[in-house]
Length: 314
Image (cartoon, rainbow, N blue to C red; front, top):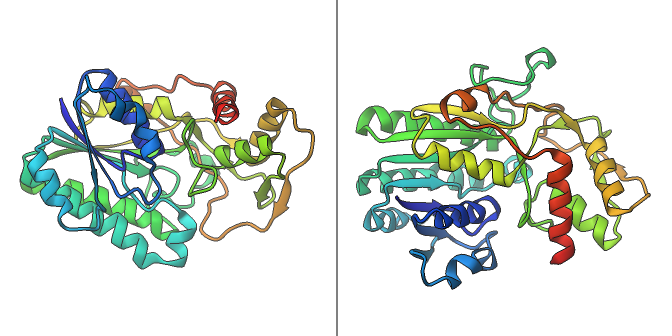
């Protein structure tokens, strides 16, 4: 398979690139390196036996469509995005420019290239909006009323993919990701709480919990998520699939488990809750099991221990 990965120098994208190359696929990466790092692709770039190439370009640049058209990928894995909910609240125009207009550049490039399928990284934590506790874990059939511009942009891109499928017969699968964590996540950038906690715990700095700590998230390990992307290249066409564990974990419980593993006895510092963030989030991944043959295989204890080991080594 010839694959193109947007955002391929990022946390999830680079792990996906490594998996695709390990399976013998040809891979091209598009990334503007605003948050991604070439260091994440060091293995891909150093192995001359692998069919790999890199394009430093922003998806907001209309010429990215020409890059994709020339590449002629069979599958486009679209992960490049503005991923910070807080940024989307402060600057919704920026969020729309990157996540909607940038995505349209990618989708149009895929159409012109004759790409068979686009696999899109959506957001299971935001597209459904505020979900009643009795509806958790939330299924894909739940209404989508996102309360942050970031969630709106992710919802809209799946709508565009549906339209392109109807108009141009280009297949897609949207993966509504839970809170992804794992090695290579940057604790200093637009990172998830696991990376932030790991970095601060191991450097002896205090950790901050926004809100009272009772808010819950569904934490899914990056290797499990990459497996879902790979499976979606051949399965789940025309579907939105939740990718999560179905398990709610409070931020306080997460901190306590990671602090214990890191040998830290101090409590986290509490700070006011942040705008646009949900109180509870958890995804039902039954559809992914049925249509992708996917299930999470890394429990939170094992996954967070891997993250702490990665930070210790780096």
